Image (tube, rainbow, N blue to C red; front, side):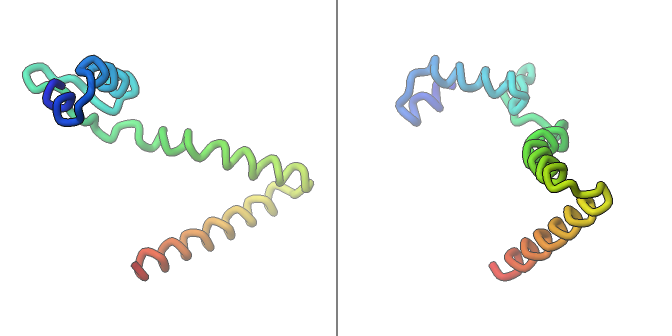
Length: 95
């Protein structure tokens, strides 16, 4: 932690606090005899779902406001998802 503090010219307590916050959030884990390391990818799927949920709720609210049937709302979502994924693939290969 001292090396990081020196490298960035910040207070060592600030670095310590940041590391502790990252540990609490599950980004870092403390290993005996090793120190802090980046945590494994456990929970990544859960985090992605948590991030996606507000957009899903928004889309669901629009479907309800438009009085769409469940099947129609799902068809529209699947169409939007397919189009978005195709665009992402095109962009990936264009870069």
